[in-house]
Length: 103
Image 1: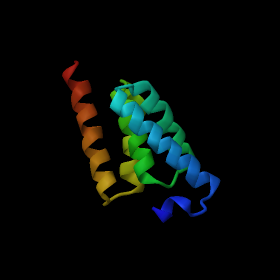
Image 2: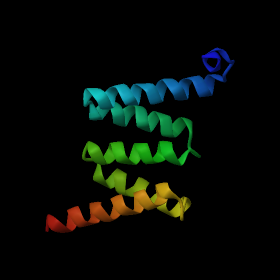
Image 3: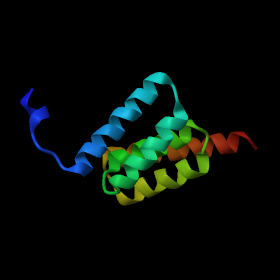
Image 4: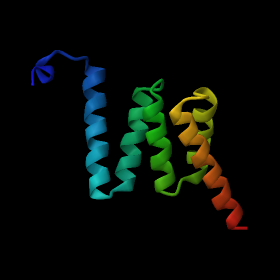
């Protein structure tokens, strides 16, 4: 595939490596590594709502519910009306429901 031979920026290359590592860690079931690389990817691409959502979902999966809630609410507010914002809103509501069921 000639696409793989095209020049790319260092930022794009690092982003691809991060996404690949997230995928590997997901297949291995290593939530902490998924979280660490998702956070790194979100920092590398702060305007990429997909990267931000991946970070929020990874935070939720490792039990960092406060961080996940903060991220979900931020996504829902900043990207209102988009599919990722709808996912974030649903997940935030589920976290609130989970919290309420504990009390």
